[in-house]
Amino acid sequence: MDSKLRLAMSRFRVLIIGFIGFLAVVGPTILNKTFSIFLCGLLSFNSVGLCANFNNSAYATLSSPNTNITKPSTKIGQIPRARKPNINLDLQQALPQDFLITTQMPFSSGNREVFLISPSTKAQQIYTINLPNASFQLYGIKFQNLAAIDESKLTPKNRLIIDTTKPENLNNFHVVFQNNKLSKIVLADGNQGEFTETQALIKSPDDQIIEIIDFPQASQTEETLIATTKPMLLISSSCNQNVSSKLVNIGDIVGEKGNKLSSSETQITRNVGLALAATSAALKNNINSRQSLSIASCEQAVQCNEKRVSGASEIRSNLFEIPRGTNRKVTLKYEFFDIPDTIELYLDGQTIHSDGPKSGEYEKTLDLPNNAEYVGVRLIGNRDPKTRWWYVISCSGSAIANALCGDDEIQTSYDDKSKNYHKYEVENEICSLDTQGCNIDFVFRVMVSNKQFIAPNHLRQKKVEHCQTTNLYIAMGISGKDTIRTTINKQNHSITNYTRKNHLLHPGKVTRKIFEKNGKIYVFTWGEGTGIKPDLNEKASGFIWGRVDKELRFAVRLMLSRKIYSVPE
Image (cartoon, one colour):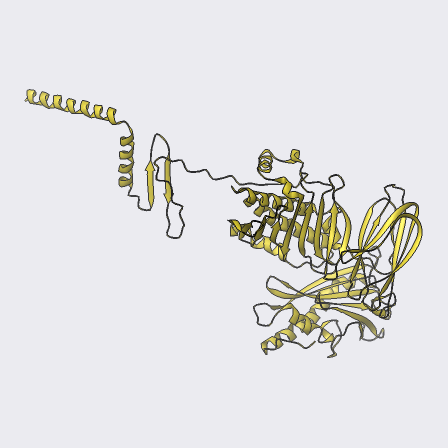
């Protein structure tokens, strides 16, 4: 028995030695592969393919019926490409910080160009936005000589990104927006990007598609989109804050797209990403300071006979509002004292008057086209801080006599330092866009179809006419007739009521505007003045205009329920 056992053990040792010798010849590779196959079978992987090579690395892919999978290499042990880190290309501090507003150029088409120049670098930004008294709209930006980036203000990672792009493309490029959303960008070399909320098409100068970039839907949050596209009336008391918030939100969205494009392996796409990063930084830099777009957007236009005086050297750029009428003329009077200064007037892309630098008192009368609403005024003060100057513009024409609608009793601007100064805002919903026929134009036409929808305490079923007068009875007739004069702005879907001297609350005005927000149509009412009872005006505004809005809402919904979708002009 012992001899048989010893014989068996001897044979087993021979087999073990032989097997070890075999492994020494074939090496460890087959052992590792065999062990991988053994693990796959042991763990019963169905949707996961596992290939392990313990001398190199591991590779695994998770499949799903709804997921497009890029076919991996069949080479065993290949290391997958590491995911690129998120890029945050922040150029806000690296761009010139000394931009100044030099010119505002109004156009009869309904917008204006605001020119900003950096004295230290000669870089220029030209913003196309709306005219005053309208919802804020950014239509486009032109950049010139913007390539002067201060790389000392960049992080090492951002400096590396700049090194892999072509900053010279920032010398001249322009960006287009639609409804305050990024639409298109064209670089100096002709390469361009076209954008939707979820995709970018990068194209060559001959319109050939170079690359398609998808943006994650999650980056466009509902809160951000509402903040970006919500109509914001520039006469609002919180105008600067609202415009600043809008510019930051637009800048954030543009910046996100720029970061995505900057991580591309394609040179042209990275160039577009760099330009978007510069656009984002410029938008965010354009808030709060006196020389910023947010301030220019909210500043009220100069009125007839309103004198402007400066006690220091500066470049002052304003818009002058032209009262409506025919055969219109404006007379510019100005005085530059001992130190010479310069004044210029602009309209529709042209300089219509320029004088200086000189000293003395002067007067110039100019004929204006009937469709012009504003004239740009730029006064270039001497660099000598002791300079002094003033200017005033008076108006005349066959339909006006130095006043709106030819009425010298109404007042269009008010002293906000007066103890009686007051303002208020009221906003109420009228109908939903989900209701057939509900839209801005329809609601506006209903509002001007009847005087009871434009002012309180008025029940006459009479259509509103431009520049007409209406008698109200604020104190039940005790104070007599309270007369207002109404102007209509069809393009802006708004009306404005101005008090005349016999009105109990004179002087003051109220504007009512129809606008869309979050899929609904609203009427927005804001009042301003320096008449009596300022506290009562502000406190009672919600109740008083709420009743007027209730009547308008009832009329609109009644007509829509009866399938009446149009109102004669």
